[in-house]
Length: 198
Image 1: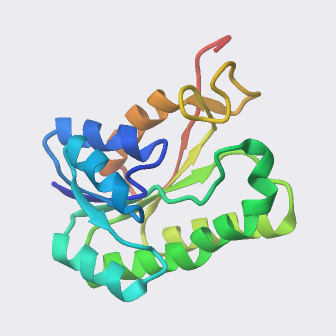
Image 2: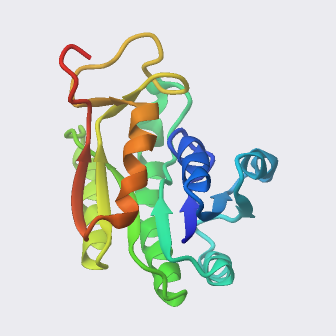
């Protein structure tokens, strides 16, 4: 299967790509950072450097790869959790305009479903809640799959030393549990820890 992963260099994407490659899929990994192309190549993906907000370039890139499935693992979040409020409009734009552009590119390429990252907890702030709802609604209306992850913990996350309150999921488990999404029907799936005391 040919799989296009937008957000391939992110915290889940960078773990998801090698798992998909190991399963025998041909993977294109999209990043907006040219210096991350070598990272993606090292993970076994064909690197695609593109900005999701450049709709024409994005559509050309997706059409050129001709994917069967598109993963939407894009976010625009800061390295420091304390800076999240300052980044809320940037991440809202990914959820809105970015999602619309990626869905349109997938449709133009006659790809199968778009499988998109979301969250399984309630965000503070009306604009952030509305952006998440808009994002999920657009994916579902296009016949895609929404994966609602718990709060991520583990290496490279905001919770490296200790897990947060539930709902939560270790980032490595989140990536592993994302792989079977290539075969699930359209709708919402939840990816959270189900281990007692974890």
